[in-house]
Image (tube, rainbow, N blue to C red; front, side, top):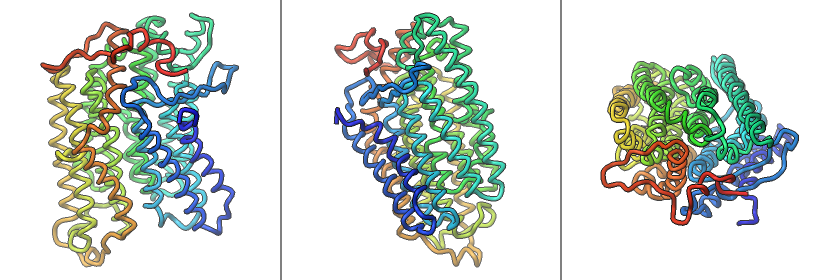
Length: 530
């Protein structure tokens, strides 16, 4: 395993699949589908291999690959994985084959283009979560815009062109700001050291003492806007409901399950390490935006007449919990944030899949067009109910663990924000249960009575997500053992760089580095790899 470039293989497999699909004849959709399934399942197999070989005792980046790429601008091909990015890779690899299977009935027109764009989307997402060079990270960040735009525009619903353009423009504006900040950071490092590099690890080891507080704050805000748009944080959120509503089911699953996690991942990966002083100083601002997102998303979700928009606004509320956990600046809070980033793809992904099944039967998302679905489709009702209670944080499912840890970590350090966020948990139960009641309960219409129940294919698509949510809810240690070492390293590095001290619950010992790892090693050049 040490000699096999596992991370490169994970990134390259869907790209190779996309190229193969473009070479296949359009008149053979069954071969195109088989190739799509084959390459997404192969990527999932590699991700599971990575998960099995990942060390729970190593706080640094693992499986690092470092090769020349663009030497003229100081950029290299550098990939690595730690506990923060590991489960984003696994979640991406899991959702892709399930989403393709759920789209077995995707329009008979252009199945070749659909599969190729979908594989290219997976390639870009995996590159984002594994890149350790800022230019390389930005390239993958931009590549993602293209397949997602064409998936919404080509296979979406009535207002798909408007939603696709809005998604593209919002993200492009944030990306431009982020690129400017990346270039400024690299050139400032060159001016101070004579070396032009965009290696995130090198810049992280230099930036905390090489940047003035003003410069650090300005650069943090530039990155923050790009991440806040993708997350999305209020008031940068308005593209998300439209994109969710108009996207095909597979696009909505990936959008909610993985794409909006890119913003939270960016805060965890880059903001704390590159701009630690600004991260600490501006934590109250981000906490406030996170709490606003929780409450705003819940209130607006309750007012929606479109079932897909209800789930879209619920995603805004869930991402608010992630931001609150991150900027609690505690190990518990960060544990909860990363755990929620793992749990949310399972629960919300399942919800969007079930809603897509409803749409295939009635060709509408309007809540008023349903009612009494349980009479004709009890299994479909049961799947939605399980995904719903998992998403609103019922104990026993993964949603509870993530929200609980985020709120506990915040309560220790930032009590007012934790109390306000906890109110959002109650609101989540209100809007989801009300939507469930209106769609699935009551007296069915004549059309609803003829609605077929789920097929075996549909059960196969949703069951793995619900089973994993239940497993992680009952046994979170399996994930937390891999998440926490990297989270502790992040918190300790912030403390070492800024003098900030994490607040901890009574009885918890001070967060320290593992035995044998010195402070200088933790923030040295490399941060865990050649």
